[in-house]
Image 1 (spheres, protein in one colour):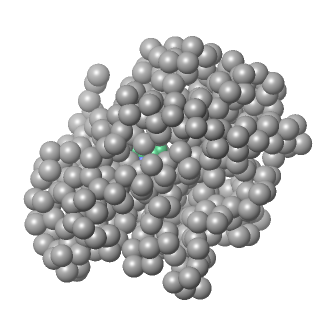
Image 2 (cartoon, rainbow, N blue to C red):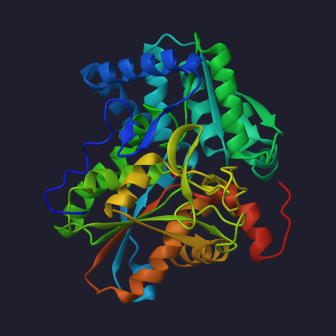
Length: 407
Ligand SMILES: *Cc1c(COP(=O)(O)O)cnc(C)c1O
Protein backbone atom coordinates (compact mmCIF):
# COMPACT_ATOMS: atom_id res chain seq x y z
CA UNK A 1 0.00 0.00 0.00
CA UNK A 2 1.00 3.63 -0.36
CA UNK A 3 3.51 4.89 2.13
CA UNK A 4 5.43 8.14 2.02
CA UNK A 5 8.65 6.20 1.54
CA UNK A 6 7.58 4.26 -1.56
CA UNK A 7 9.41 5.26 -4.72
CA UNK A 8 6.87 4.97 -7.55
CA UNK A 9 9.37 5.80 -10.29
CA UNK A 10 11.43 2.60 -10.25
CA UNK A 11 9.22 0.71 -12.74
CA UNK A 12 9.53 -1.16 -15.03
CA UNK A 13 12.20 -3.81 -14.45
CA UNK A 14 14.69 -4.73 -17.20
CA UNK A 15 12.08 -6.90 -18.97
CA UNK A 16 9.35 -4.29 -18.88
CA UNK A 17 7.36 -5.52 -15.89
CA UNK A 18 5.35 -3.01 -13.88
CA UNK A 19 4.71 -5.37 -10.98
CA UNK A 20 2.76 -8.24 -12.56
CA UNK A 21 1.85 -6.17 -15.64
CA UNK A 22 3.58 -5.38 -18.94
CA UNK A 23 6.24 -7.70 -20.35
CA UNK A 24 6.92 -8.74 -23.95
CA UNK A 25 4.16 -10.98 -25.32
CA UNK A 26 5.12 -10.99 -29.00
CA UNK A 27 5.94 -13.50 -31.75
CA UNK A 28 9.51 -14.78 -31.68
CA UNK A 29 10.29 -12.87 -34.91
CA UNK A 30 9.82 -9.53 -33.14
CA UNK A 31 12.05 -10.24 -30.14
CA UNK A 32 15.22 -9.23 -32.00
CA UNK A 33 13.65 -5.93 -33.10
CA UNK A 34 12.42 -5.14 -29.59
CA UNK A 35 15.84 -5.92 -28.11
CA UNK A 36 17.53 -3.77 -30.75
CA UNK A 37 15.11 -0.94 -29.93
CA UNK A 38 15.62 -1.31 -26.16
CA UNK A 39 19.40 -1.24 -26.52
CA UNK A 40 19.41 1.79 -28.82
CA UNK A 41 16.95 3.63 -26.56
CA UNK A 42 19.18 2.92 -23.54
CA UNK A 43 22.15 4.41 -25.42
CA UNK A 44 20.15 7.42 -26.71
CA UNK A 45 18.85 8.20 -23.25
CA UNK A 46 22.41 8.72 -22.01
CA UNK A 47 23.60 10.53 -25.13
CA UNK A 48 23.66 14.34 -24.73
CA UNK A 49 23.51 14.88 -28.51
CA UNK A 50 20.27 12.88 -28.69
CA UNK A 51 18.77 14.91 -25.84
CA UNK A 52 19.93 18.17 -27.40
CA UNK A 53 18.40 17.30 -30.77
CA UNK A 54 15.14 16.23 -29.11
CA UNK A 55 14.97 19.40 -27.00
CA UNK A 56 15.62 21.55 -30.07
CA UNK A 57 12.80 19.84 -32.00
CA UNK A 58 10.41 20.10 -29.05
CA UNK A 59 11.09 23.83 -28.73
CA UNK A 60 11.25 24.86 -32.38
CA UNK A 61 9.10 22.37 -34.29
CA UNK A 62 6.60 20.97 -31.78
CA UNK A 63 6.02 24.20 -29.84
CA UNK A 64 7.09 23.47 -26.26
CA UNK A 65 6.73 24.48 -23.52
CA UNK A 66 2.92 24.61 -23.68
CA UNK A 67 1.22 27.10 -21.34
CA UNK A 68 -0.28 26.14 -18.00
CA UNK A 69 -3.38 28.33 -18.19
CA UNK A 70 -5.52 29.37 -15.23
CA UNK A 71 -9.13 28.87 -16.34
CA UNK A 72 -10.48 31.64 -14.13
CA UNK A 73 -13.98 31.98 -15.54
CA UNK A 74 -14.51 28.22 -15.70
CA UNK A 75 -13.25 27.82 -12.11
CA UNK A 76 -15.62 30.56 -10.93
CA UNK A 77 -18.51 29.02 -12.85
CA UNK A 78 -17.92 25.67 -11.11
CA UNK A 79 -17.52 27.45 -7.78
CA UNK A 80 -14.75 25.42 -6.14
CA UNK A 81 -11.07 24.68 -6.75
CA UNK A 82 -8.83 26.75 -9.04
CA UNK A 83 -8.47 24.86 -12.32
CA UNK A 84 -5.35 25.07 -14.46
CA UNK A 85 -5.27 23.62 -17.97
CA UNK A 86 -2.11 22.10 -19.44
CA UNK A 87 -2.44 23.19 -23.04
CA UNK A 88 -1.18 20.21 -25.08
CA UNK A 89 -3.90 21.19 -27.57
CA UNK A 90 -1.62 24.03 -28.70
CA UNK A 91 1.11 21.70 -29.97
CA UNK A 92 1.93 21.24 -33.66
CA UNK A 93 -0.62 18.80 -35.18
CA UNK A 94 -3.04 19.43 -32.30
CA UNK A 95 -2.38 16.85 -29.60
CA UNK A 96 0.24 15.45 -27.24
CA UNK A 97 0.99 12.54 -29.65
CA UNK A 98 3.77 14.51 -31.38
CA UNK A 99 5.96 14.45 -28.21
CA UNK A 100 6.38 10.70 -28.65
CA UNK A 101 6.52 10.75 -32.45
CA UNK A 102 9.50 13.15 -32.55
CA UNK A 103 11.36 11.05 -30.00
CA UNK A 104 10.78 7.81 -31.87
CA UNK A 105 11.68 9.21 -35.30
CA UNK A 106 15.09 10.22 -33.93
CA UNK A 107 15.52 6.64 -32.68
CA UNK A 108 14.47 5.22 -36.05
CA UNK A 109 17.17 7.30 -37.74
CA UNK A 110 19.77 6.13 -35.23
CA UNK A 111 18.72 2.54 -36.02
CA UNK A 112 19.17 3.20 -39.75
CA UNK A 113 15.53 2.39 -40.55
CA UNK A 114 14.14 3.75 -43.82
CA UNK A 115 10.45 2.98 -43.42
CA UNK A 116 7.97 3.99 -40.70
CA UNK A 117 4.66 2.35 -39.82
CA UNK A 118 2.06 3.23 -37.20
CA UNK A 119 -1.49 2.46 -36.11
CA UNK A 120 -4.03 5.17 -35.47
CA UNK A 121 -7.52 5.45 -33.97
CA UNK A 122 -8.83 9.01 -34.19
CA UNK A 123 -6.02 9.76 -36.62
CA UNK A 124 -4.06 12.06 -34.28
CA UNK A 125 -1.19 9.60 -33.92
CA UNK A 126 -1.26 8.89 -37.65
CA UNK A 127 -0.99 12.62 -38.36
CA UNK A 128 1.84 13.05 -35.82
CA UNK A 129 3.73 10.10 -37.32
CA UNK A 130 3.18 11.19 -40.93
CA UNK A 131 4.42 14.65 -39.90
CA UNK A 132 7.71 13.50 -38.38
CA UNK A 133 8.25 10.97 -41.20
CA UNK A 134 7.80 13.77 -43.77
CA UNK A 135 10.33 15.92 -41.96
CA UNK A 136 12.79 13.00 -41.79
CA UNK A 137 12.23 12.07 -45.46
CA UNK A 138 11.17 8.50 -44.62
CA UNK A 139 8.51 6.33 -46.26
CA UNK A 140 5.41 6.09 -44.05
CA UNK A 141 2.43 3.69 -43.90
CA UNK A 142 -0.43 4.24 -41.44
CA UNK A 143 -2.90 1.50 -40.49
CA UNK A 144 -6.38 2.69 -39.54
CA UNK A 145 -9.68 0.87 -39.03
CA UNK A 146 -12.15 1.42 -41.87
CA UNK A 147 -14.76 2.75 -39.44
CA UNK A 148 -12.25 5.28 -38.14
CA UNK A 149 -11.20 6.38 -41.66
CA UNK A 150 -14.85 7.32 -42.19
CA UNK A 151 -15.46 9.12 -38.89
CA UNK A 152 -12.08 10.92 -39.08
CA UNK A 153 -11.91 11.69 -42.81
CA UNK A 154 -10.20 15.04 -42.17
CA UNK A 155 -7.22 13.36 -40.51
CA UNK A 156 -6.99 10.81 -43.35
CA UNK A 157 -6.66 13.69 -45.82
CA UNK A 158 -4.02 15.35 -43.63
CA UNK A 159 -1.93 12.16 -43.56
CA UNK A 160 -2.14 11.85 -47.33
CA UNK A 161 -1.00 15.46 -47.82
CA UNK A 162 1.91 14.66 -45.51
CA UNK A 163 2.97 11.92 -47.90
CA UNK A 164 1.81 8.88 -45.92
CA UNK A 165 -0.10 5.94 -47.33
CA UNK A 166 -3.22 5.23 -45.24
CA UNK A 167 -4.27 1.58 -45.27
CA UNK A 168 -7.88 1.00 -44.12
CA UNK A 169 -8.38 -2.20 -42.11
CA UNK A 170 -11.80 -3.85 -42.42
CA UNK A 171 -11.29 -6.91 -40.17
CA UNK A 172 -13.38 -7.31 -36.99
CA UNK A 173 -14.72 -4.09 -35.48
CA UNK A 174 -12.56 -2.15 -38.02
CA UNK A 175 -11.21 0.23 -35.37
CA UNK A 176 -7.99 0.67 -33.38
CA UNK A 177 -7.42 -2.93 -32.20
CA UNK A 178 -7.53 -4.26 -35.76
CA UNK A 179 -5.22 -1.45 -36.94
CA UNK A 180 -2.67 -2.50 -34.28
CA UNK A 181 -2.90 -6.14 -35.46
CA UNK A 182 -2.15 -5.10 -39.05
CA UNK A 183 0.73 -2.85 -37.99
CA UNK A 184 2.26 -5.74 -36.01
CA UNK A 185 1.84 -8.07 -38.99
CA UNK A 186 3.61 -5.54 -41.23
CA UNK A 187 6.40 -5.12 -38.67
CA UNK A 188 7.04 -8.88 -38.48
CA UNK A 189 7.36 -8.98 -42.28
CA UNK A 190 9.48 -5.85 -42.78
CA UNK A 191 11.33 -5.58 -39.50
CA UNK A 192 14.83 -5.18 -40.98
CA UNK A 193 14.24 -1.73 -42.47
CA UNK A 194 11.00 -0.69 -40.71
CA UNK A 195 10.42 1.02 -37.36
CA UNK A 196 6.99 0.82 -35.74
CA UNK A 197 6.09 4.11 -33.99
CA UNK A 198 3.54 2.84 -31.48
CA UNK A 199 1.28 5.69 -30.37
CA UNK A 200 0.54 5.13 -26.70
CA UNK A 201 2.07 3.84 -23.45
CA UNK A 202 1.10 0.32 -24.40
CA UNK A 203 2.38 -2.83 -26.15
CA UNK A 204 5.51 -4.88 -25.54
CA UNK A 205 8.53 -3.52 -23.68
CA UNK A 206 10.19 -1.05 -24.27
CA UNK A 207 7.17 0.85 -25.68
CA UNK A 208 5.23 1.59 -22.45
CA UNK A 209 8.40 2.91 -20.76
CA UNK A 210 9.77 4.72 -23.81
CA UNK A 211 6.48 6.41 -24.75
CA UNK A 212 6.03 7.46 -21.11
CA UNK A 213 9.51 8.95 -21.04
CA UNK A 214 8.86 11.00 -24.19
CA UNK A 215 5.66 12.40 -22.60
CA UNK A 216 7.15 13.12 -19.15
CA UNK A 217 7.89 16.59 -20.48
CA UNK A 218 4.18 17.37 -19.90
CA UNK A 219 4.43 16.73 -16.16
CA UNK A 220 7.90 18.23 -15.79
CA UNK A 221 6.70 21.50 -17.31
CA UNK A 222 3.40 21.48 -15.39
CA UNK A 223 5.24 20.94 -12.09
CA UNK A 224 7.60 23.86 -12.72
CA UNK A 225 4.76 26.09 -14.02
CA UNK A 226 2.38 25.52 -11.09
CA UNK A 227 5.24 26.34 -8.69
CA UNK A 228 5.83 29.57 -10.64
CA UNK A 229 2.12 30.50 -10.65
CA UNK A 230 1.15 29.40 -7.14
CA UNK A 231 4.33 28.54 -5.22
CA UNK A 232 2.88 25.13 -4.29
CA UNK A 233 1.90 21.81 -5.80
CA UNK A 234 -1.70 21.00 -6.82
CA UNK A 235 -4.08 18.80 -4.81
CA UNK A 236 -5.23 16.95 -7.93
CA UNK A 237 -4.15 16.00 -11.46
CA UNK A 238 -6.74 14.81 -14.00
CA UNK A 239 -6.13 13.25 -17.41
CA UNK A 240 -8.09 11.03 -19.80
CA UNK A 241 -6.83 7.47 -20.31
CA UNK A 242 -6.96 5.61 -23.60
CA UNK A 243 -3.76 3.60 -23.77
CA UNK A 244 -2.57 6.02 -21.11
CA UNK A 245 0.21 8.13 -22.61
CA UNK A 246 -0.97 11.68 -21.91
CA UNK A 247 -1.97 10.67 -18.38
CA UNK A 248 1.31 8.96 -17.50
CA UNK A 249 3.23 11.87 -19.03
CA UNK A 250 1.48 14.27 -16.64
CA UNK A 251 1.43 11.96 -13.60
CA UNK A 252 4.93 10.51 -13.61
CA UNK A 253 6.92 13.55 -12.40
CA UNK A 254 4.44 13.91 -9.48
CA UNK A 255 4.35 10.23 -8.41
CA UNK A 256 6.59 10.76 -5.41
CA UNK A 257 4.74 13.90 -4.25
CA UNK A 258 2.58 12.07 -1.71
CA UNK A 259 0.09 14.94 -1.30
CA UNK A 260 -0.73 15.16 -5.01
CA UNK A 261 -3.67 12.92 -5.94
CA UNK A 262 -4.17 11.83 -9.53
CA UNK A 263 -7.20 10.58 -11.41
CA UNK A 264 -7.29 8.87 -14.80
CA UNK A 265 -10.61 9.14 -16.62
CA UNK A 266 -11.68 6.35 -18.94
CA UNK A 267 -14.44 6.31 -21.54
CA UNK A 268 -17.77 5.46 -19.91
CA UNK A 269 -19.52 5.49 -23.30
CA UNK A 270 -23.25 4.96 -22.89
CA UNK A 271 -22.77 3.72 -19.32
CA UNK A 272 -21.12 0.66 -17.78
CA UNK A 273 -23.02 -1.87 -19.89
CA UNK A 274 -21.04 -4.66 -21.63
CA UNK A 275 -19.75 -3.54 -25.06
CA UNK A 276 -21.05 0.03 -24.65
CA UNK A 277 -17.99 1.55 -22.92
CA UNK A 278 -14.18 1.35 -22.77
CA UNK A 279 -13.59 1.70 -19.00
CA UNK A 280 -11.17 -1.16 -18.31
CA UNK A 281 -11.14 -0.61 -14.55
CA UNK A 282 -14.96 -0.99 -14.43
CA UNK A 283 -15.47 -4.71 -14.69
CA UNK A 284 -12.27 -5.45 -16.62
CA UNK A 285 -10.02 -8.44 -15.94
CA UNK A 286 -6.39 -9.52 -16.21
CA UNK A 287 -5.33 -10.66 -19.65
CA UNK A 288 -2.84 -10.32 -22.50
CA UNK A 289 -3.45 -8.21 -25.59
CA UNK A 290 -1.09 -6.96 -28.29
CA UNK A 291 2.16 -7.43 -26.41
CA UNK A 292 1.28 -6.64 -22.79
CA UNK A 293 -0.33 -8.21 -19.74
CA UNK A 294 -2.81 -5.78 -18.23
CA UNK A 295 -6.41 -4.93 -17.34
CA UNK A 296 -8.70 -5.38 -20.28
CA UNK A 297 -12.31 -5.89 -21.29
CA UNK A 298 -12.91 -9.54 -22.15
CA UNK A 299 -15.61 -12.12 -21.59
CA UNK A 300 -15.22 -15.22 -19.38
CA UNK A 301 -13.58 -17.16 -22.23
CA UNK A 302 -10.95 -14.45 -22.59
CA UNK A 303 -12.42 -13.11 -25.85
CA UNK A 304 -11.85 -9.37 -26.19
CA UNK A 305 -15.14 -7.50 -25.91
CA UNK A 306 -16.39 -4.80 -28.22
CA UNK A 307 -15.88 -1.28 -26.88
CA UNK A 308 -17.59 2.04 -27.48
CA UNK A 309 -16.78 5.69 -26.93
CA UNK A 310 -17.78 8.94 -28.59
CA UNK A 311 -14.03 9.61 -28.78
CA UNK A 312 -12.06 7.27 -31.04
CA UNK A 313 -8.86 7.92 -29.06
CA UNK A 314 -10.26 6.30 -25.89
CA UNK A 315 -11.99 3.43 -27.67
CA UNK A 316 -9.61 0.56 -26.85
CA UNK A 317 -10.09 -2.67 -24.86
CA UNK A 318 -6.87 -2.56 -22.79
CA UNK A 319 -5.10 -0.03 -20.59
CA UNK A 320 -1.34 0.67 -20.42
CA UNK A 321 0.42 -1.62 -17.89
CA UNK A 322 1.82 1.18 -15.73
CA UNK A 323 -1.71 2.42 -15.04
CA UNK A 324 -2.75 -1.11 -14.01
CA UNK A 325 0.17 -1.08 -11.57
CA UNK A 326 -0.54 2.43 -10.22
CA UNK A 327 -4.17 1.39 -9.75
CA UNK A 328 -3.16 -1.64 -7.65
CA UNK A 329 -0.71 0.45 -5.65
CA UNK A 330 -3.51 2.87 -4.81
CA UNK A 331 -1.27 5.67 -6.11
CA UNK A 332 -3.68 6.79 -8.83
CA UNK A 333 -7.47 6.49 -9.01
CA UNK A 334 -9.39 5.61 -12.14
CA UNK A 335 -12.92 6.64 -12.95
CA UNK A 336 -14.97 7.28 -16.07
CA UNK A 337 -17.04 9.90 -17.83
CA UNK A 338 -19.87 9.03 -20.22
CA UNK A 339 -20.27 10.27 -23.79
CA UNK A 340 -22.94 12.74 -22.64
CA UNK A 341 -20.77 14.08 -19.81
CA UNK A 342 -17.84 14.53 -22.19
CA UNK A 343 -20.02 16.37 -24.71
CA UNK A 344 -21.31 18.66 -21.95
CA UNK A 345 -17.74 19.47 -20.87
CA UNK A 346 -16.75 20.06 -24.51
CA UNK A 347 -19.48 22.70 -24.81
CA UNK A 348 -18.84 24.22 -21.40
CA UNK A 349 -15.12 24.85 -21.95
CA UNK A 350 -15.75 26.22 -25.45
CA UNK A 351 -18.42 28.68 -24.26
CA UNK A 352 -16.74 29.83 -21.06
CA UNK A 353 -13.02 29.77 -21.88
CA UNK A 354 -12.97 29.97 -25.68
CA UNK A 355 -11.13 26.65 -25.92
CA UNK A 356 -12.55 23.76 -27.99
CA UNK A 357 -11.03 20.60 -26.48
CA UNK A 358 -10.71 17.16 -28.08
CA UNK A 359 -13.53 14.79 -27.10
CA UNK A 360 -10.87 12.61 -25.41
CA UNK A 361 -9.70 15.52 -23.24
CA UNK A 362 -13.36 16.38 -22.58
CA UNK A 363 -13.57 13.22 -20.43
CA UNK A 364 -10.92 14.66 -18.10
CA UNK A 365 -12.70 18.03 -18.11
CA UNK A 366 -16.00 16.28 -17.29
CA UNK A 367 -14.43 14.81 -14.17
CA UNK A 368 -13.14 18.25 -13.14
CA UNK A 369 -16.72 19.52 -13.45
CA UNK A 370 -17.84 16.79 -11.02
CA UNK A 371 -15.19 17.27 -8.34
CA UNK A 372 -14.15 20.94 -8.45
CA UNK A 373 -17.38 22.28 -6.86
CA UNK A 374 -16.81 20.10 -3.76
CA UNK A 375 -13.23 21.28 -3.23
CA UNK A 376 -11.96 24.32 -1.32
CA UNK A 377 -11.52 27.62 -3.19
CA UNK A 378 -7.75 27.59 -2.76
CA UNK A 379 -7.34 23.95 -3.83
CA UNK A 380 -5.56 23.52 -7.16
CA UNK A 381 -6.43 21.14 -10.00
CA UNK A 382 -4.40 20.58 -13.17
CA UNK A 383 -6.35 19.09 -16.09
CA UNK A 384 -4.43 17.86 -19.12
CA UNK A 385 -6.05 19.16 -22.30
CA UNK A 386 -4.45 16.46 -24.42
CA UNK A 387 -5.66 17.81 -27.75
CA UNK A 388 -7.85 20.29 -29.58
CA UNK A 389 -11.34 19.59 -30.79
CA UNK A 390 -11.16 20.67 -34.43
CA UNK A 391 -11.21 17.01 -35.52
CA UNK A 392 -14.36 16.44 -33.44
CA UNK A 393 -16.48 19.38 -34.55
CA UNK A 394 -18.50 17.40 -37.13
CA UNK A 395 -19.26 14.64 -34.63
CA UNK A 396 -20.15 17.05 -31.83
CA UNK A 397 -22.42 18.99 -34.21
CA UNK A 398 -24.29 15.77 -35.01
CA UNK A 399 -24.90 15.10 -31.30
CA UNK A 400 -25.51 18.64 -30.11
CA UNK A 401 -27.22 20.41 -33.05
CA UNK A 402 -28.49 17.28 -34.82
CA UNK A 403 -26.79 18.54 -37.99
CA UNK A 404 -24.63 16.74 -40.54
CA UNK A 405 -21.75 19.00 -41.53
CA UNK A 406 -20.31 18.67 -45.02
CA UNK A 407 -16.70 19.72 -45.53
C1 LIG B 1 -4.87 9.58 -28.67
C2 LIG B 1 -5.45 10.59 -27.79
C3 LIG B 1 -5.75 10.32 -26.45
C4 LIG B 1 -5.65 8.95 -25.84
O1 LIG B 1 -4.38 8.40 -25.82
P1 LIG B 1 -3.51 8.28 -24.49
O2 LIG B 1 -2.37 7.45 -24.93
O3 LIG B 1 -4.35 7.64 -23.45
O4 LIG B 1 -3.10 9.65 -24.12
C5 LIG B 1 -6.19 11.35 -25.64
N1 LIG B 1 -6.35 12.60 -26.13
C6 LIG B 1 -6.08 12.90 -27.42
C7 LIG B 1 -6.30 14.30 -27.88
C8 LIG B 1 -5.61 11.92 -28.29
O5 LIG B 1 -5.37 12.23 -29.57
